[in-house]
Each structure stands twice: as C-alpha cells, then as structure tokens.
Length: 376
Image (tube, rainbow, N blue to C red; front, top):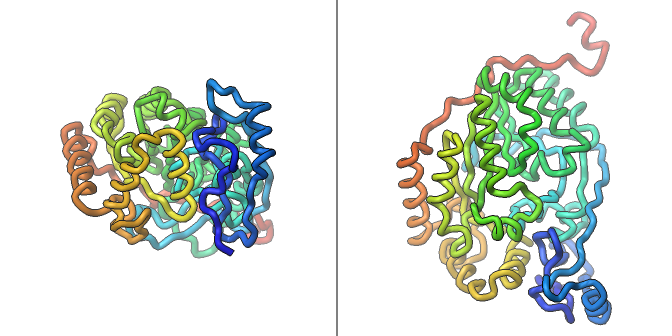
C-alpha cells in the first residue's frame, strides 16, 4: 500500500500547529501496513471547539512515559565520520520536540509515529544503571569514550524526576570511564558535582547544541528545549567548573538559522566554549516530510527556497547518507557554509583540538554476580 507522506487532517489548515510541539502531525511510519487518516469532520470539530484562531494552534498534547526493561545499554557503531564507537541513551523519544531531530525515525521500531508520538510518547529504560554496571564489568571489556545522549537528549524534562542519566553518570565517574555528554538542556548543571572532578581527571567533556540565538525561532524549532540564552549560561557555568565545552551549531538550515552562524560562534566563545562544530540539516526517512510540513506551517514564504537549497547540497535529494557527506553536504553552497564556519571559528579560537579523554584510569565495577567476587 502506498503511503501519503503528509497525512494532514483534511479540514484543518497546514498552518495549524500544536502548542509546545515541533511536529505538525503524526505521519505514518515507514513500517506501517495501514495508512492512518483523520476523519475530516472530526478534525474540523476539534479545531472549532479548541483552537484559538488568533494563535492558530491546536490544543496542547500531554506527555506520557512508559518503562521498558532493556536487554543491553551500550550501543556500538562503526561510522567513520563520528568520533566515538559507542553510546548510551537512557530514553527513547524526546520531549524537546526539535523538528529536525535525526532520531525521530527510531520511533518507527516501536510502531509509533516519528511525528507527535516521538515528542509525547516517551520510553524510559528502567534498568539502565544496572545494565551499564553489568556491561562495564564484562570480561574483556575495554574502555573507550562513551557518548551519552547522542540519539535522544539524556537531560530532557523527564530526567528531572527519573534521574536515569544521573545514575549513569554516577557509574561512569565512579569507574573513571571516559565519556562525553551532548545536550541542549540546562539540567546538565545539576550534575556538576560529578562532572567537575571527572573533568579534572580528564575523563569527561560536554557539548552544548546551540541552533539559534533567536528566541522566537527556537520556540518553534525546538519548542521544549532550553532557550538560547539559558544554553549560553550553561556553557558559561560548565566552563567555570573546569569542564571542557564544545558548542555544536546544529543543524544549519539555509535561510532559517544559517545567517546566524557567525553570531552563534561569537556568543559561544564569549561564554567560554573551547571548540565548535557544525552539521548541515539531515533529513533521513520520515524526518523529510515532517520538516517540510513544519516549513509550510511556519515559513510558507520560503519553504520551497529552503528545500531547493538543501537538495542542491544533497545531490538533488532530500538526504544523502554517504559517510563524509551526510554531515556537511556537497557543492558550492556547502563549501561556502564550511568556509564561513571555519573562518569564524579560527578567528575566535574555537578550532582548537581538545586533549583526548583518558581511558587508562578505568576500573571495572565489581560484578553484580556475588560468586564472581569471592576472590575480588
């Protein structure tokens, strides 16, 4: 059966968005055998009953969290264009709601939509801490940098209550295992009591993603993430605690946040960041139709221009997954973005190489199996 990529409610204008959410709809995921369509009369009735026509937004959706008992926690990869071979993600889905999130398609494996479901139906790995201890204690395990929160943000709002990330960080710092954190949440400041001593030993670094300095743009691009000002304050706080901070200007979207490249780097340097990176917008799988919906809802005047420029940098397609190209694109415009970024980063001394994190301090945790510890 052929799917309609947009699956928009028939009677509701495409400009109608959800309060506090990034995605415009719950599109069908790529594994669905049945296409879901909203009844047009029901959609129109919901709009008439609940919509504030001045705000042009549907009512807010509540967030729900379910728990799973995971079978493994450390995920390994062999990608040649990223700087780590393993990662840990305590949560599936992310309430931040960033419309550009490349992880949205992972919700398809849960038989959920990469759209609004990804932002509102979250899954927490209840046994994350115990699993990590078991995997680090496995015979033959060799320490290398673990990237924490690279798929979905490990410091998203539900972490305040569940503290799974806090537990993971406690295990990593106790065993002196090298790890990197990437987040756009100020909640990372809560764990400075663990991170600062680890940084002094050279086993941790943090990356803060800053997409824009424009608060209005941030509210629709990444609606439940910390504001740009708050993120800069987080950079400053971490740096003051001796924690090496990299700022990731990501993703760069032509004609949306691309004009801000230099200003974001200037603000990052002033806040104390030691290094900066960037990535071009990636639109794998269902992210492409979701992003196009978002563009049509928020920037109808430039939607076609944005997509044309992106395709120009992706070999004429919405996305090119080739290693070496997927992060930065190709062609004249991709080269211009790269030159602008590199020039500004060099001027601000954000192109410095940070010392590699140490893996020689790692001490495996005692096995959870008592019999194995009789002679330990």
